[in-house]
Length: 332
Image (cartoon, rainbow, N blue to C red; front, side):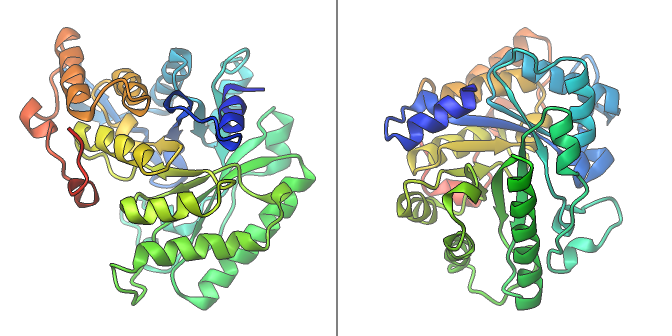
């Protein structure tokens, strides 16, 4: 069993402990924003100079995998092909996973307007090709928009994906975004609309075809607790969203774990950090209950200072919570 499988087994057995919290690095941005998602190339002082090249981005992935703290490395099929061929994951406890579909709501390339329309299903990666290179896990994404035609098309594509995954022995976890267009639903009700959509979408899916876990936005304690407690067999994880401050990163981890999440999949919060390895190190400490968010921010700035890296924000600014959903339940 992989480290991921061992943790999931303990979660399902009801013997979860904070050290079992699953952390994934989402380095799959080239499937959406594309070139700019590779993140900033920083000078010796840590300041942004230009966008990273693909080669530099692959080096970032290698460094995170070799650090051996995250449980999953999520990347595009083309990048995992390169990294797998060179043996990066051989004897590694980090599980490689691909973004298995790239729906139109993540097509946020420069100048594009695709995201102004309800999400449309689309897939680039071919599962047989992935199995051929030794990858058997992927992320499948669905966005519900209270639009019957768009949502039926998304659910139909999801059904077809499950059939193909079953045929090729491919496992997946399910990402459900908040709506990407105006739905006409009261914002206070929107988190519960998303919860209902998830439960409804999986109600007709037997255990053999269900996702290993969920990846959803953190819509506050009540909505997360409702979904996480509804079905113990459904493991709930949170996505990172925007880069935010370093306090936002650690606060999201602490709150999500406390209110029932057992997985975090962070992309920009790691990729845009001045020191990704230090962010990951402290993410593990916060998720495991070994460090509080404020202390972790101070530790992070201390690490930057020791390495001679100028932080993007002052310590005072980086201790601020900027994401509204996190403010009312902030931890010390």
